[in-house]
Length: 616
Image (tube, rainbow, N blue to C red; front, top):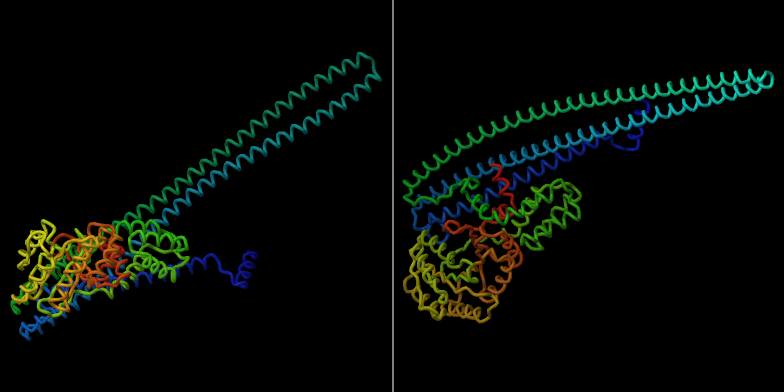
């Protein structure tokens, strides 16, 4: 006790900390880190929900004709004011819902983390218990071996002592015999010698019996001790097994209660969503009767629900996200962020086509706060989403009409990138907003190009200007501009032939089309939109470079993100060229051409949104 007091005094005097103090400090530090992570998750989800709601609201306003191009003047001022007030109320309600949903998502993520940590602790306790059993068994074997060695050594010592005594007795007998021979007759000496021999044989037999008895007793003692040790070990193992079973039953009961609580919560949430949907439908009916407007788009304010905006983007980018997320989880489970881990993280991000600069920024941001500390895959996803959002947010720019008549849009890109499909989807959207749209089939080389554009023209209710196969594309574009002016067309959308960026003669022909457009209107084309196929990966960088030099690209549309694991290339080329991003394509349907939202795209690509959606 005095020694312990002395040790505590010395530890306090030297400023040393006890094991309990160190554990308490480690627990406090871990709790602070978890709190910081929860706050980051809450802020991130509020920002994601707000950005997604903003993008969905912009689409609703565009479908209702409430854009900035002058259509507001056509509505009654009183109706427009009432509609704006209603939209503001809906926006406030959506923001509150987004904050509540974000708080629920963070709480659920925290519960899952605690459950995972608890199971890990149970596994660790079971492993320690097994190690303790093995150590005790090994100690028992060592004790038995030492006892046996000690018994054998004692037997050997007793035998040596007996042999020594026998030798002394024999020496004394011989001395007496010599003395008797000297003093007595030969007969007496013979009798004495026979007697001595008989006594010697009797002593040797007695010594042998004693040694055998002692050895048998030692073996019996060792056997009894071994049986007792094994019995105690079995009893202890049974007690420990019973304790583990009680703990398992307690855990199962807690899990059952948690499952029941989740079911009740899901039921309450479903009832609340149903009531909210009924209120929204009633409000929409009242609004339609008051404003005599067309119904809003199908997507409601619940951007996190199944079929919502964030959910659609997350599903569309699932191939780009799943592999990177699984590799990230495998790489950073219970691991410190050291130099080797940072290098592995950079390799993983570069392999996901995000580019060297993005990978370096993510690693630098994490190393500032987390170097030489344990880090989770969720913290990496948050940092990755922040970096991607920082790069893409300045480039989040919808197509803004300038008011020119006609507004000329030129669509360029390589074969199969989705130019014609993208053009058709945008034509349908502008037509639904009340614009007069005309399409020009500038792809005169591909046999099915005119037929495909004609189908989209019928869907969009827009006339299509086309020529003979292999006709001069520049001349057809000239005629289309003349007809658009004559018919008072609002928007002229020009399709072009797919060109490989490394074919000089084909790129020169595209340059000729641009020159012809500028002769008609020096400010045209008002929009030169490059359509990129996400499946080409890093080759998109070379395509962007070539088409920007030839046609003066003003903005990007990236398609087929749902069919590739290379969606990260949009971040790499945006970081390099700084071109505005208008839309992304995540499917074949008209509604699968989404307005680009940087925070939503960043959260979906990093896997952060997928983690939240899975917890719902």
